[in-house]
Image 1 (cartoon, one colour):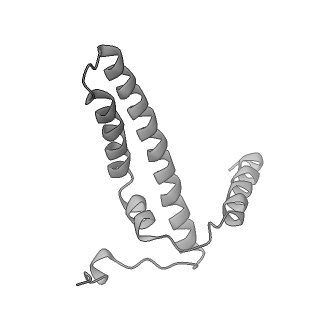
Image 2 (cartoon, rainbow, N blue to C red):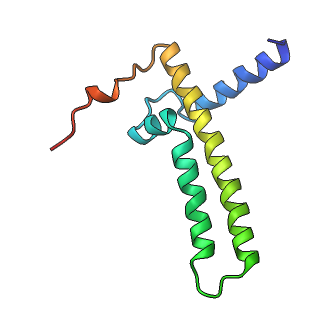
Length: 108
């Protein structure tokens, strides 16, 4: 890895640690780390539905809803990929040890 890129990566993780990135992930963050596409698609479809559902919807509204839904979904997907990388870093550094999904019994 080139020296400049290595410095940028170290700086990025330093900022992440400063902002609380060394804390174990919450239940939702673990889900997003395992399934980054599911919440992104759900959010994109939700934005599209909010643009299409109102009465009197025109073609430009559908196009705008599709565009903004796609952009928001892509942004959320990239955020989920970052969360996956953060969880890998926490495992690699020994800060957090994930439990398999079957190890957490349902609460009744």
